[in-house]
Amino acid sequence: GDRLPTQENIEPPRPPNAAIRRTGPSPEASVGAIHDAGGVGTMAHPGVRRRDELIAPLVDSGMDAIEVYHSDHTPEARHTYLAMAQRHGLAVSGGSDFHGEEPRRNTLGLVTLPEEAFSALVKVHERRAT
Picture 1 (tube, rainbow, N blue to C red):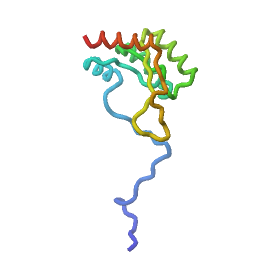
Picture 2: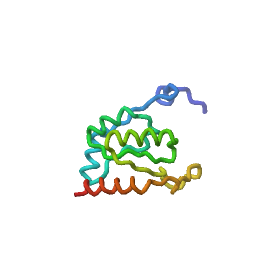
Picture 3: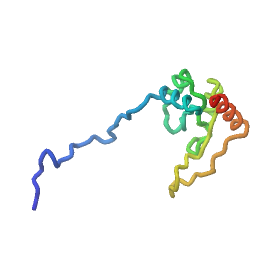
Picture 4: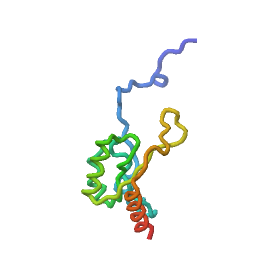
């Protein structure tokens, strides 16, 4: 039969585009954990995230690199973040952001890192690994 609405079976209305705050370690704590594991602390695809206000505090926390070459970065974004990496003394990274079989987003291998940028990134890793 028909059920009458009750407090238990009515989902409260949610405003459109309601933001749910993420929980977890701060970006700064994340850089520290990456370093503790011998990794290279890198900000992924800043041109997609558009959280440039995090870059300076992350640099102050020891971030090593910023992803400049990314499948969703425009040439302007690559230029902006390459200049930012140079200004802050960061290595640069790159990637296609491929996370498995995604028919709408088959970007595997479409983004390459210039050889000199790759060599610099390897040197950062070697310093962190020792």
